Amino acid sequence: MRGRVFLILLLLCGPAAAEQSILVAVSGNFSVAGARLAEHFQQQTGISVRTSNASSGRFYEQIVNGAPFDVFLAANADYPARLEDKGLAVAGTRFTYATGSLVIYSSTVADCYRALTDKEAGFVAVGNPGTSPYGDAASTFIERGGLREAVSGRLVYGENILQALQYAVSGNAVVAIAAKSHVNPRDLPSEPTCVVDVPRGQYDPILQQAVLLTSNRDAARRFLEFLKTEEAREIIRQEGYEVPE
Image 1 (cartoon, one colour):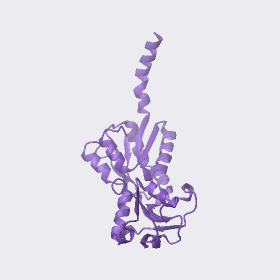
Image 2 (cartoon, rainbow, N blue to C red; image 1 turned 90 degrees about the horizontal axis):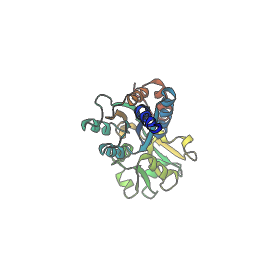
Image 3 (cartoon, rainbow, N blue to C red; image 1 turned 135 degrees about the vertical axis):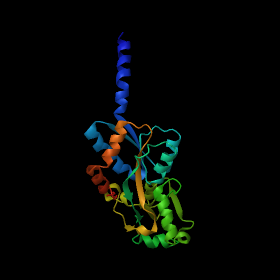
Image 4 (cartoon, one colour; image 1 turned 135 degrees about the horizontal axis):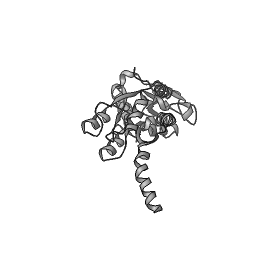
């Protein structure tokens, strides 16, 4: 009898409990901001937000293959749009939640742009352009900036832009073409020796888009709406991104 009562309670409460928890795929560059946003949303609503961090390209492949995410916070607009086209995301829910930018970073040299152009300076770390939108933007900068010959044979690839930055933080690469949002003294073991903004015209705008996946749950929709609030936008600004008007 007691076991039967427990089973009935489990059947009654299980779906409700599941509805109070969502799983969000967060692009690796946005991991710190994503964790802060999840914490604030949970405090306000009581809905648990579990975040998973990886490159946007890796998440795209996982979602296509059935990974049970509720929301995708990508580092570009392309992957969410492709999921919409495949019927794996809810049409009309996609929007830009942040705009990212690139910097040249070094922990070891005072003139990081010179190290980028000097063939003898050492390795140059970038994100994998096949899976990392920031890596793709870095590749565009290398082409538009006329740097392909200078970096030939010196490129090392991180799975995502954060791993590329870590190569330069550790000194295994002399410079990294990194996300500006990651070059925060709070998150680094020491002050950067050199940080230079990459001119915006030398890569396409990095429009980071969110989309609701086809679980289409109310709790996930509420999280997306929270991302549009001024509270959430201010957190995103604090983490080194721009937000759309």
